[in-house]
Length: 173
Image 1 (cartoon, rainbow, N blue to C red):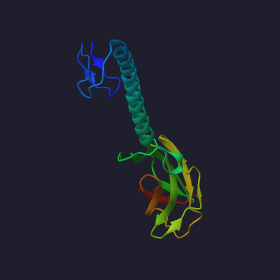
Image 2 (cartoon, rainbow, N blue to C red; image 1 turned 60 degrees about the horizontal axis):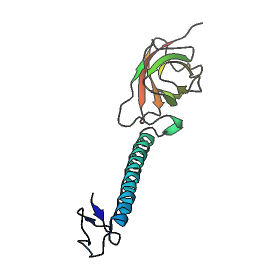
Image 3 (cartoon, one colour; image 1 turned 45 degrees about the vertical axis):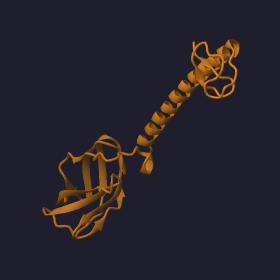
Image 4 (cartoon, one colour; image 1 turned 180 degrees about the horizontal axis):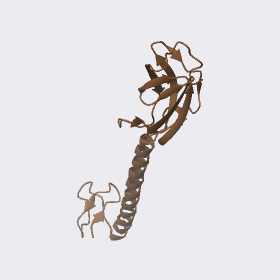
């Protein structure tokens, strides 16, 4: 069993009477105590190392799952999937859409391009993962020609995403 110097902590070979590092006298009783203390410190050091590793892992998990804008998890570099899955027509000023998303989002704006007409009402501005049905009201717009195609722009809070939605206008009497 190696003998630890009580003065400097140097590990000396078994049977040594004096420390090979500092020259202090070694006794078996003191060295046994030092070995036990050193073993205990080593085990605590191992525990501290494990605690530090767990702490590092927890920090990384926290960074990876930090909440982003509007309390939704950050997506990182992964591009969100956005699909319009319904037929798109503005009927008497209302546009009903079904949007499929891979992650939660919010509609930040909605307007018709050329001529610019801003939405006056959006039924569900907070969208969940999966399918979402929304209704957008643009008002009774006689400037839109029935049967003509227009483009509706939807702004989402997903990396500044804007969705162009081609629509047809219909008026029912």
